[in-house]
Length: 194
Image (cartoon, rainbow, N blue to C red; front, side, top):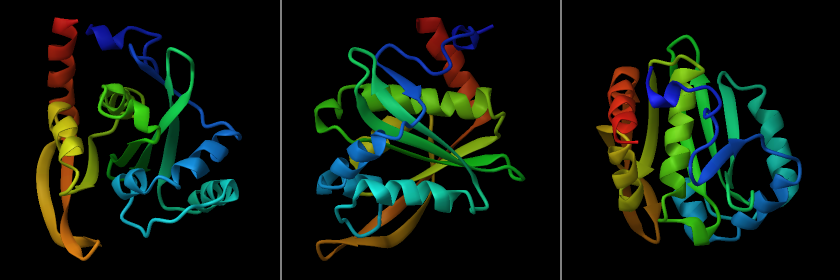
């Protein structure tokens, strides 16, 4: 049995925990939409401020999707502050999830919080949902995220060239994925060093 298989640590790491998204969290999500840098890392959609009601409506729209979405608030363990969000959009018939993750609070970026939340979310996908693969996309201007994903075991699988335009410049959409067997090997190595 590996260290990560110990009961009780499915949602909690050393820096963060994954929790349910609470009704008041929509207010924080709305504040994050005022941060264009975060929005451009989170989505390829046009950046724009949105009110809290937008996020409540978004959850309702997700119920009609072909995917089953598992959303988590990322909370700092020190003070339980909401610092980010992660989600898995699962296609059950293929046993594959598309992952989205972002640290909305700028003071917590680049300090390991996102890396740990990524690991917890991917671990949930394989340990709890019994998936075969987790995939994601990131833009070529987000070198930091690419490094974090590769460090976690994600492999570059393809590139959609010129998929996004920002400020008159075209950027590639980089597709990455991790298979259950790759995650298990990483998890075993991680447990050995803990």
